[in-house]
Image (cartoon, rainbow, N blue to C red):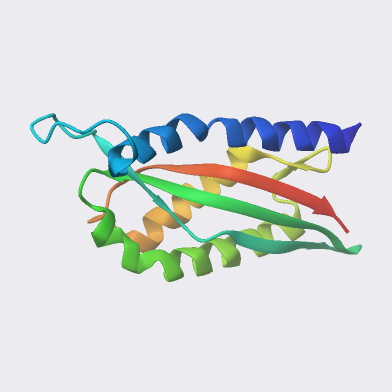
Length: 148
């Protein structure tokens, strides 16, 4: 039953990204022409490489977690933040590796607490990028956990 709930949650998370993908396909020449005089959106998204890390507790390796993170940033700032991607991923791994294993409130009934993960990733993002680069939100595009 738990496995079905996790699969359903991942499926619903993935459905949330479909409208954005359809919009992007239209703007890339696959559909209707975009008016160059039309105002651009307020934000754009930078998708980071997938992150996979083990959850190691006092019982040993208990789970493996995989996630895809997107950063919601001001329009036109993607090229300023993209070079920081390796540093961001490294900082995310360092922060979550210890926190998940030590049980700093990131797990609820053996399931990952998405809100806590997003809060931690937001704090880490602000530390890595500093005050000059404004990230409006840290989004989890997909989050999976697999018992070992």
